[in-house]
Length: 326
Image (cartoon, rainbow, N blue to C red; front, side):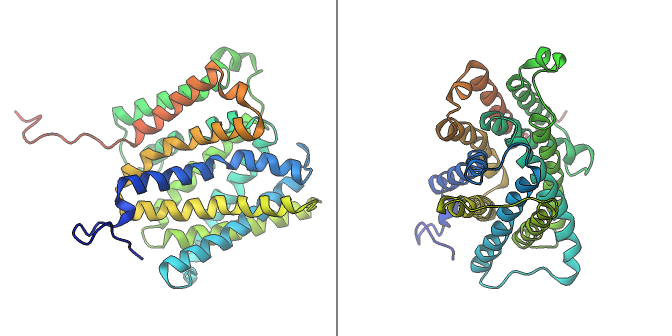
């Protein structure tokens, strides 16, 4: 249903900037709450850092629920049940392996071994890796000075939160199971974004994402179960937490898709700078990580990462008529 701001203007309400900004902020709050929600889930389900199997099961349960929600939300918006065409299941499977199974295997591992603040800032590197993939591997676009500058600024923020070049050289700034796993997750995030761009030329992106969430969730849950993991619901909070984690992906993805439908891609993408900001703030509030979040390094790293996201997504300046001509 396309709500109008006024009959005279005939403008869809989702394209009205105050509504666009509020909806984008809500999406970023959801995405930003993922790190705190997962770390809280580890406590509620009593999953230790070394319990890989149960961690994989938790990720599987989350994305199975997210897939069901996404399919239902998308079906309501489309007024028909969304199901992939027979020839599309290979695309769903490929996307599921990259976007859900591999990405979130590493994502859930990382959050068991690093802070929510660090995880939120490092996770933003996916935005810059995606640009490099799109330019040099998939050849969707060309590198520009603005995009290069944005990537360099963003990666500078990542380097700063890791302690700087000296700390990395000394080997004490990162662990493979923590910060290293988050960077691995970002590589799969960037690759999956490029795959969605390719597959969406002929497929409904909501259909693809909903079913790949669902399929990937089932696979992750089965792997975790086979490895001997378990999910014990010690209280009702476990159920609420799991439902909320599913809604994070389903709700944010569906609403973000609506915004992309009625707005220029650059306008929506640039608002993604709020994602790491919300992740850091919510980690400070719910995980008690205010000291790291509001440290000089934490604030500067967040500013650099946010500036980088804005820079790489800002629309290119169009040349004025006659400019650059002899």
